[in-house]
Length: 128
Image (cartoon, rainbow, N blue to C red):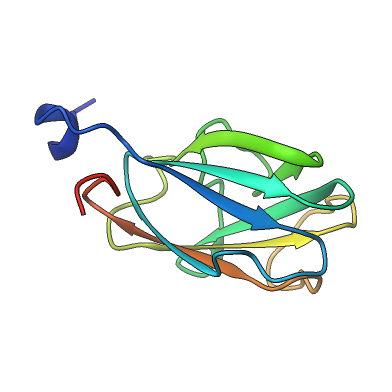
């Protein structure tokens, strides 16, 4: 696998922390992250599922993710690396929490919580 431009120049990937809850708005609502950066979700309140989409399509946007969702426990979850087999620079990754257990197929019918967005670029957050 080819190294990212940032890795070739010795620039460390950035870690982005996003606070989520089942019924709340993610903080920050929008995150700008490089393709080699990692994401940590800090869950306040009860355990839940975090559904993910890439450009509007349900997808496993994080490495080692399956079923288009992550199971989150209260507290810090991650860090998660971007799944570069699915996500590319310029993509818009969205996520939304749901207290209900997964049932496939899952798509646009997730109704709990507010969708957050991660804008993916080709450079690390440490480079910006």
